[in-house]
Length: 242
Image (cartoon, rainbow, N blue to C red; front, side, top):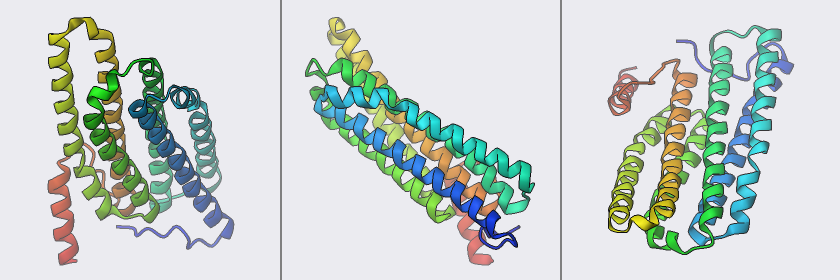
């Protein structure tokens, strides 16, 4: 398997282009991570002003996606990269798509948080939302860190944490459904809180995707639609025997 060497090209300019692309992805990731944090804070603290700010800032993420995508296309056209360089470009194009979608989910958090800020209904579910949000934010942060460090083993470990996110989301959904049955008059508010929980769960899914791209980038293996836990075990075994 071709090893990953992003800084060993004859052309120093090509080295710089690849590094610039990677840095742009991390900058985009930092912006998205901040939007998720702000959206969750707005939801938990009933901060209508912050919620409005989050709901209106999605255009920044969209613009970064377009710029990075265009830079990748230019590199493909000028350099015709192969092996690990090509994997980097492919992984970046996929990763920025997921980051843009995380930005969309953060925008939803902001929008629904703004609509819910006039009531105190979210306070009833603050503990559950805070726990779910904490799990998701941690996954997103760590997946971006794995991308920055090109750490495939860490990426596999992080991806497995999605099971905890799913379990917390299902618990919160059951609680909301029970309260909806008990008091149907609250259907609008409970549905909005449910959609916020769903947005957080989807952010976890997109974080898993980023982890999968790290494994593809570093190891050249596509682990989508596979059992990540067993794949991680297989990777550990291969590393021990190599």
